[in-house]
Image (cartoon, rainbow, N blue to C red; front, side, top):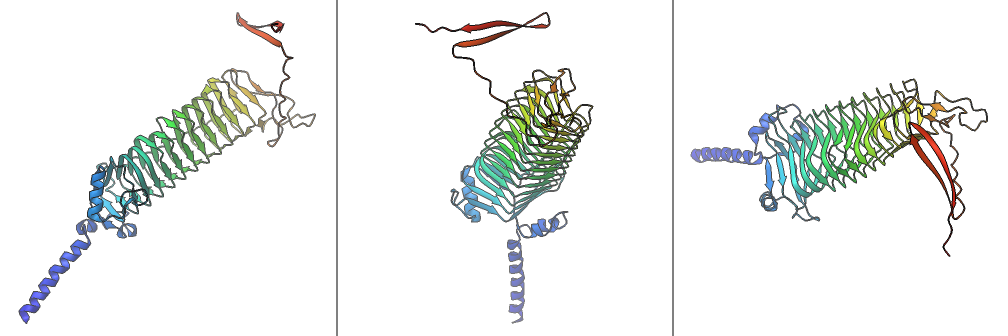
Length: 447
């Protein structure tokens, strides 16, 4: 009996060790993890897991089968990768060359927080993914994207990553990056090379040593909307080579660089954004054409409220620009055919609140708080034009007496009688402009 009892005790101990080891597959790593800064109750709720490296549909199917992941890879039942804790120096998860439907949710991706660590999760040449409710921290990049289609990245937290929180070095197409919280990245919050038919919205980005949101390659039919960006050391939002993009309802405060920077773009709308206490210019527009910048509030920038360096045929209207240390709005020498109307300029720092160095720019019906009278006929239009700074020697001929003045609606010109074509010929000779009235030609109908 004593031998049997001793044998039972030994057997129980062996079984206990086996069960304990099986129930905690990275028992040794968990003891290390417990000493890592930031490792806490969030991590303890998850099962530690080795890196998941999948290349192709067959590998995803094989691993899903081996680990009994829910789902079958269809749109109605995507494979579910969930409830894991990853701690690796190299990539914790790779999803490559996969077009099955899949989700990566409620996981933690951790790392040692030094320059040796790779990206947390790589998604490349893949589609049909859903990445949500994960924590990515102490990695080089949190999430690394290369050529992805129809992937949603939402409600994740990115903390203390050594470069960018989310970076795409290829393209995103038909993707949604929304409602993520990004703090203390040593690079940009979100940095995308090329975006097509995608949306970046509702993200909260703060205290990053780079830009808030950058799309630095080609951007087509994309929206950057409802993001909150605070305390970044670079540009708040940067768009380059954009066509038919919109930047709206974003709030950018205490950015060291420009608030919004647009370059080499066409048909871009920038509206209903709030920019406050920026370290440089509020909105910068360079080499942009046929755009609209309207209904933005720009307060307290340590530079120019809206700086139009170059481009043409863009309209600036209904913007509220206040307390810029320099001009409220400045059009550079390569800005032409711009229209500036119905804006409010209050307390901007230059001697004149608007400067025009360009050509053929129209400035009309704006409110300047340093030019509100006289208005002898009480039509709420100041009787004396507001002269602008700059070599263009331009002026606002009808400055508004109050910010809420509604200017008169311009009347349509009366067309000439049928068959009559008035013609003026403008000839420039010897630096002088000569206007020659050629006359009125009567166009006779053939009989």
